[in-house]
Image 1 (cartoon, rainbow, N blue to C red):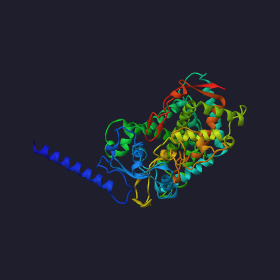
Image 2 (image 1 turned 30 degrees about the vertical axis):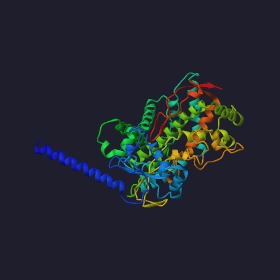
Image 3 (image 1 turned 120 degrees about the horizontal axis):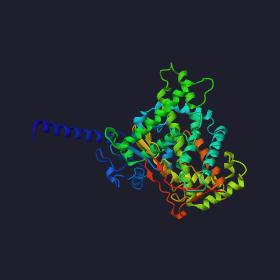
Image 4 (image 1 turned 90 degrees about the vertical axis):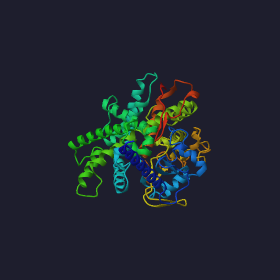
Length: 496
């Protein structure tokens, strides 16, 4: 063998050893961490997965029985502390809310955001953006009657589209995403889109595909090995291109707003942000800049479109799978609302069964099962352990929503989980589909209102008809990763 070749091999071996040693040290540095399986250098605990393509959202649950509700797992070289069940998640996100308020690493989309935008920001940037976003959303009616009227209007547009199906089979995916997206669009862009707008349909496809890509095994591998995979070709790069296209659309809308901005009459979220940018242009510590404007708007637009529409799609399946539940909802709608007026959010208090059904749909749907990663912002004492600053934490929301201490039959669809012995609605502390603590979903109030108004408006006018027998309806997500992706299906709507 030539000397040059031997030197190359020697250097490659040395470099590999250094990488392995560095990864091993990173795995074991600092703190008295919760127990967990012994990791291998670089691979972590991956060999303990049943298959390499197994969903990582199921992997930590396999370890809960052995190590308890709080344990450490190594996803490749990435060390995370996992929280299972209501008590552990509440102790962290609520009782020690400040310590656990950091946003953990989500590498598959971090290269699009680079720590900008309210959803993935940390520190002072996150505090400024969250405070501003909450105030602005409330000013535009989130949780108030003004946003209710927008939802009611969109629900009527949806009914018109549903009537055009004339009882024939159709896939509801873009019917639901169009109507839900128009609600958040009216807030962030100041207007709704026509349902046949080609740009709008393209955006919805990109959002839907992005949510799917974030949940693939490729994305999960990227989250573990981003240091390598960012340089490799493959499907894991598709999400980057999709989000960049969405960013380009938002940036173009910002330009349009800039050209017609009236500081005395803001039309939407973008206008309000532009006005704040002008107010703070001389403040060197301001986080009101173009990057944060584009990416915070994208955060709101994406989350406000996909999560509610996916829940509605799952909800239709549950109601067709359990027709007796749908029939009881119909009866309650007929009794409380009738057929001569449109549903209103104030009806919820008089409709405990319908409210319980919607809660149970959200519980079983479990749209983001692992939750969005958190990180501790300082060295933190938790249940007798020491979590060093910067430790990533996975609060498994799915384990809370299926906590047997709080739900009698957690794997079964049962609206009774939210009803007392007298049929009145009862709250459940373990109902956390929007997460909890300082990082709770910004749009929770609007999402809750949307789900109630859409379900009641649709079921006031239509009965759902499956193309297969109820017992044959498969509610299993077609993919589980970052999100639970609803299966693809068709249904018929029969006018009532």
